[in-house]
Amino acid sequence: MKQSKLSQWLPKSVQALKGYTRADLAADTTSGITVGLVALPLAMAFGISSGVTPQAGIYTAVIAGFLISALGGSRTQIGGPTGAFVVVIAAIIARHGLSGLLMVTMMAGVILIFLGLTGLGNAVKFIPRPVVIGFTNGIAILIASTQFKDFLGLRVAAKVPSEFIERMRFIVLNLDRADLAAIVLAVASLAVILIVPRLTRRIPGSIVALLGATACVALLDLPVETIGSKFGGIPTGLPHLQIPQFRQELIIPLLPSALTVALLAAIESLLSAVVADSMSGDRHNSNVELVAQGVANLTVPLFGGIPVTGAIARTATNIRSGARSPFSGIIHALTLLCIIMFAAPLARFIPLATLAAVLFVVAYNMGEWHEIPMILRLNRKEISVWLITFVLTVVADLTIAVEVGMTLAALLYIYQVSRTTVVAPLTAEAIEKAKAHIVQDHSIPHYISMFHVQGPLLFGAAEKLARMANSVERLQPIVILRLRYMTAIDATGLYAIEQFNEKLRESGRTLLLCGTRGQPKKLIYTSNLPHLLGARNILPNISSALHRAEDINEQFGGIGDEAAAGLAEAPV
Picture 1 (cartoon, helix red, strand yellow):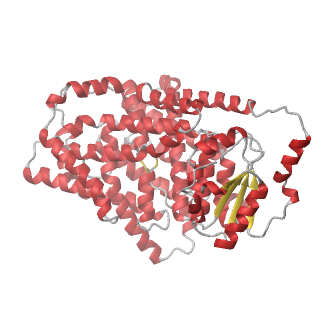
Picture 2: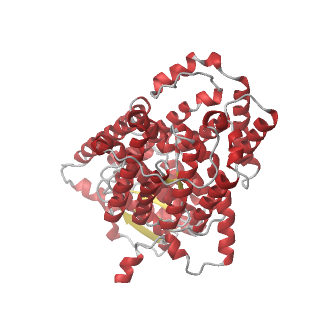
Picture 3: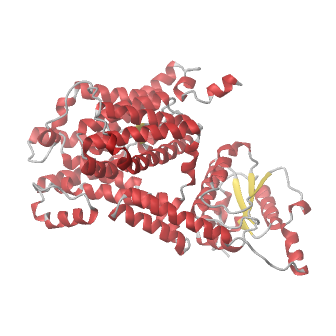
């Protein structure tokens, strides 16, 4: 038992040592070098857009990438600076200076370690989907807005305002100072980043754009702003250890910012780990992962670094490149270290316009824009939670946006739960209608796995269905989800069903829903579920669901893309 408890806290890197082969090392080396090259322009861009130096971004990627892979609870997660922190970091530096940022990062590290050790990290799963999408959309807009100056090559001495509306007004008023060479370089870089992945997945588009633009600047002596002209280049060698200035009087004022950084780090790292699980077939350890994120955030400020978390795009690149263990992430960090030790002088030619193009693509990819149509099909109350969170993220402050969004979501939760209480007469007609829904009167065939949801499937409970999705290999070819006693559902609950269906479809299984009524029925039919499952796979009761399952089993054996047969049908 003691050994079992100890093994729960073992990092995935230690577990990966068992049975590790030369073939695994070769695969990890290839993927590690690939993702290291992908991380290079991103690390510099995140550092610059956050208001620190490009080398601070690279140092952060090296140290955090090593620690998160070595100590974390995911086999393929890549850690480092991400776009989610750009706006928060810039705001902290504007108010409290660099020393304030370093304090916030270390405070967030302590909070993350506490969340991991106590198991409270699971609480981040209770954040409703409209809130997550709202501030993700908002952050993407803010990141893009900070890049217009470099993308257009605006030559202005005045500092760009930190507020979104004033920033955009400043950009518009100074459009006449745009530099044609910078615009051409930025547009060409953007085109390369978007086109290269269509031609080959082996070479990252951002690296091709970075190398091409840097070569043009160095060989043609283009008059554009570069890392060298703005920052004096990147120093060669290892980062220097420097103890941050600790200001006790700032602990309370900085606590909201530290909580925001910790919350963002927890959400993005666990979301990235879930994505990694779905791509690699592994299962991460949330608590170990949060402890590793905390240790990384405690350490990077000692070298002038910025907040870190799991990076979804780099993690996906790592897996697609053939990563088999956390040693790929360690090699990614060592690759970046070799670059700053041996190739740092060349960085002075890197144009800021190209880095702006890289961040435009990052902002678009992180925006979760495909989720907006689904949100807009929900009721007005859920739409308002998303919209208010989005608007406040853009025009006010991320901390305020999350606080207000969570408060509104909690009030909406209480309202929806209160409406699930029903008092109705029990008549003979009602008893007769209920017979079609009674499971005890039906025989469940061997090719069916059946589950029922009892009570509201709202953001506080949707993770229970997500947990079931992690063990789909134990299920039969046809899965029936009985929803007769599901009293309410929200965007997070719908998303959980969508993810469950996706996992089943990937494994060759078919999902049927049956028995929906009231608010859940109305919301399901206005959502994307009838399209994803097929309208014929959403049934009124258990009797019709069993007949449908019998037809599927006879025609398809329950396996395959059978749901596609109902895609063209409109819901009834």
